[in-house]
Length: 241
Image (tube, rainbow, N blue to C red):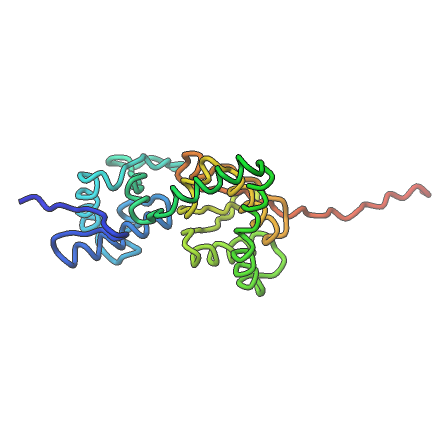
């Protein structure tokens, strides 16, 4: 009989406990990273790529993951191009159930209808106050460098359920959140995303730019953090010679 694999109550269930635990871990890693190859997953879980592919094949059959080609900037070797795996939208939602989306959306519609968009903006700002305070406490030892603060903030947001990570790129840094507890509500009320972006900017200590959000259909909430401006010392030109 073919094994049936389903995500239920935030975990990946399977007929055997060991397979189920491994697939739970694979699903959690993909949630945190956004995407990964079988080799990368195997290295993280101390399993062979072949063992990981067995689980990925089952998850593919049940439409829990999907594939995408990995861009290779180096010389192309032999064999098939590497493929990365990512959770499908349905799988991500099952791992992060949103039980109160309906009533939250209805409440915000009522606020907007009776008090206007400004009231929704004020409400969104009030909702992130506690999150900002907790994350600020986690950044106390991060120093002043925006990129270092972004890395510390990613850890704090992960603890809050956002599955975040920070990376250094040529133009500065990038903060990615692979999970959003309010994505469904924010799809209709972007003020929630705007309030969160303002919190990120204040915590990092510099202007940031949101490039993508899960609420708008992207796979990851991506925030760009510009590199610190380097002050070039002034050059004195002598005119008395």
